[in-house]
Length: 459
Picture 1 (tube, rainbow, N blue to C red):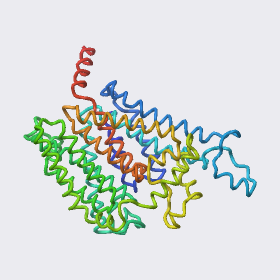
Picture 2: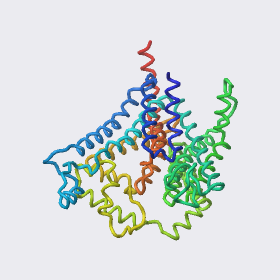
Picture 3: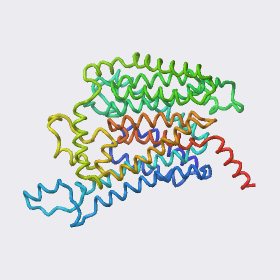
Picture 4: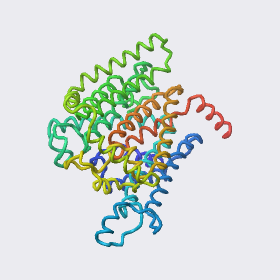
């Protein structure tokens, strides 16, 4: 049962980006079902008490969202109803419900995506509690991402007007892979590149080699896939696909995440102060060179459109006004698309569909209110703390929390100015990588002491 459970989990993590980012509700239901089956059959013997404690803040955040949805859907004559009801009441005299949510089923349907990310995160932490399983999971995710990048490159060269088997309606001339939006594709491929970059640094630093102790097909395959030339090729493919998206924020933030990963990996190493600063400076120079080599298309868009989008600023200001009107309970999870058109500012013009706030934190505050946003923000900061401390304190397998921290920074910062984490295909992948890094953030010394205590108890 354990092997089947791991297979279900890995299948969801790998396949979620495939069906156009899993935006359809049917795919969200399928992935939720598979993850529930995987959790019910998971081997919990490898999960330490401290790793289990990592799941408590996630449970608190999900419970908070559930409570907020219940309050938003609660019909009460004395409650503050949504402002969207006032116009049909006044003009047509309709008897409409007194509830905060502007839609009848929107919040509970939107909760499916929240549940999916939390289940993926939970399953990744449980699975990656074993170091060997964590290494294997990151290797699988890295090469799956490489295949997605290779497909994106070839698709743009061979059939640039198609996305999978559908006609491509937007972002013609730019690679999107299996995603509809190029910005999400850029963040996804930037995350995949990090899965190659950090192990490449590790292999170059440790200079591991030699034949495995018990050679078999699996160990030989792992040796080939972990070779520096293979890791370098995977990084190059993902970076090329990233550049072909033409995403300004995607490329700039990915390069910044590359530099962060290099710094996090190098800081604890005993290289000497002068050599360490030399390496860090060289890494920054390499990042600039990389940006120059692969960022030509993006640079053209920056020159033409600039770095700041005035329309997004107008949307952010309008969203802030919604928060001011509904600070405690929000407008209802998943209701941004229903409420925003009624108050859409003239600065946005008549073109474009603003079904999202283009800022995940801002949209959370709009839909769930400030208290729920504060809870989610605190849980996120708590995860960041453990990822960064694990990146600096771990001894063995320290590269795993380094990957988790750098991918977390990339995904969250990009979602502050876009909605990549709201796309289930990337959100599941992101949750798997970050959960894996968080599970291995426990310092090696503490883990060994814990192992000795468990062994004594067993004896």
